[in-house]
Structure formats: C-alpha cells, structure tokens
Image 1 (cartoon, rainbow, N blue to C red):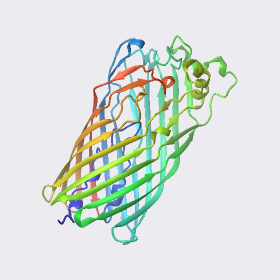
Image 2: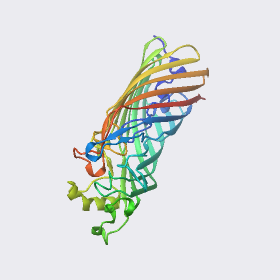
Image 3: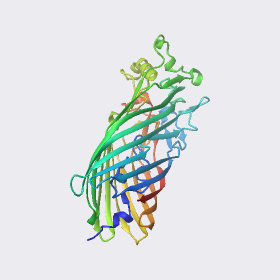
Image 4: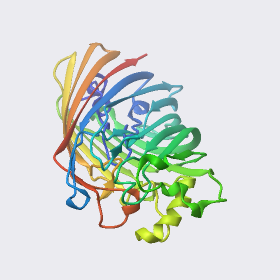
Length: 408
C-alpha cells in the first residue's frame, strides 16, 4: 500500500477547529504537527467558537433561569518550519493556548446595579523548536516557549455578595510574560502515511501584580475585601499564575489506498492550577473559617486533570480534494465547577475539507459540533464542598475555522 503523497495532499491532523473548546481554560490544543511536516512549510489559520451555556439556579438560592453566559470568541495560529539540512530543522509556532470569555446578563445571583459577573482571559505563545533527525524516520525536537497572559474578573450579584460577601470584587490582570520549554520525539514512515509523535510542554510561571478593587455599595453585605480585619495590611502584592504542563500524543497511519486513520490524546495538569490574587487571598483567609474554608480559598481552581481524545478517518477524494470526519471527547476538569466556566467536558463530531489548487499549497475548512457536559456551578467560597449555586444542562457549541498551508 503506497501512500507516499497522501500527507502532502491532506494534512489531517492540522485542520482548523481541532481544539477550540476544552476543559478549564484549554483552547488551541498546542499542536506541533506543522513542525513535523516534510520540507519547508508555512501555515496560518483562524478558529471561532459560538457556545450556548444556560442554566438554572438552585431552589436554595432562589430558582431563576440563567440565560446564555458563554461569549463567542476567535483565536489565531501560525507556524513556520524550515528544513535547514537533511538532519536539522527549525520552527516557530504561534498560538493562543488558554482563554476564557463569559458574562452573565440577567440572573440576580450574578448581576446587580453595579454590573455583571464576567471573566476574560487571553494568552499568546511563541514556541521556537529545533529538530534533529539522527537516523531515518526519527525526529528529536526541543525548544523554548515565550508566553504572555492577561485578563480580568468581575464578581457581581447575590451569589457572591449575599452568600460570601465578595460581590463587587474586581481583578485586572495586566499583561505579563514568562518562559517555558517543550520537548518531543516523532517517528514516521511516509510510504504508508505512518506518523507518531509525543510532545511534553512545561508549566510556565508568571508573577503578576493584579490590580484589585471592590465596590462596597454593590451589595447590602459589605465586600469582604474591605473588611476592617484587613486594616493595615497591604492592598496589593504579587500573585503567582502558573499555566499547566501538558502532554500530546498524535498518531496517524494509512489503512487503505488514499485513506488514513488519525488520533490525538492530550493530558493537561489542571488539578494543580489555581489563581488566588493577593488581596482576595488575604480576604478569603479572614472570611474562610466562617464559610467552612479555614485556609481561605482560590478565585479559580480545578479538582481534576483534563484528558481529551480525538479519533477520525480522512480520505483523498482526488488530486485536489480531501476530507475527514472525527469524533472527540473531553473529560472536563472536575464537577462541580467554577461559575466562571460552568461546563464539564464534551463530546463532539467534526467535518473537515481541504482544497489543493496545486501540489504546494492548500485551503482547508472545518466545523465541529459540541455537546457540552452538564455541571454544577460553585462560587469560589464553595470550592471543595458539595454546595453549588446553579445547574447548567443541555448546552452546546459550534466551532469552525479556516487554514491555509504553503510548501516552499
């Protein structure tokens, strides 16, 4: 079975909309597949997500319908790979690996006269890779990663003020940069379209002076961040934000003429991720004992690591057209979850198509439909307890994207 030219006509593992929606803040999937393409190669793409995330507050908190709080967002990626010699390659990969965009609009649990509860997180990565091919079909690669992160959180409504007196809290995370690393190994046999790669990415540690403030009048209960017990203590200080380590396993093999099967498995260490802004942490330490949290609590945290998998089949239809279908699953990062991201994992199905006007370039498009996992949503003060504010069920999302690729 000769499939030597199949991967040139159809780059199955890099069609757009492959990550897009995942557990916690995971977005792009952090693929390095562009770096493993033969010869000199460039690609650029855009992915867009349109989620619908609705819920119902619990009877204990006053039953209310919660309208769609999931914000639409888009992100970009690009990659350049140069085969410098027969044994040495170099690459640059740009992506936006982690992110969030959500805002509540109507429920009094999460809104009031002072505004809405909302969150926005943006990250950018530039990965610089060097690859060595010591023997035929084996590629050893490693490199550095430059990452920026910024964002903001605003808490409003009775869910934070009436219950735990954090209503009116604001956190503005200014852009910060830090460095990490990655390393991996790949093996391929082009004649049968066999390709396997294993990539590890390190955690990246940021130290940020988050700008924190509170609006005491936002709720009848004064904001705990202005509690008299904090008098004389610094209002600001450094906060550690560590984006998680991860492992990607990518597999592809020919199964018949002009047809390949592919799979991706990803692990992300969300269980060890938490954000506790400085003043918020001091305040939670004061409020925590009365809320059953003797050591205080984090603004955002997760209880489980994320595991996700995608499997599919792609086929070359003729010299210019190719396509694929896929099925994906994501474990989520624990349930109950934060009110700032109230879903637990997903199932999805995807469809991709690629048009190659010439042998050295292509245009690809993809779409995925997600069935989002039901979740119980907690405030920060309820983390690691059985208490929650609302149920989010029967939600979904659609993602789509486009990509261009060029060999030179």
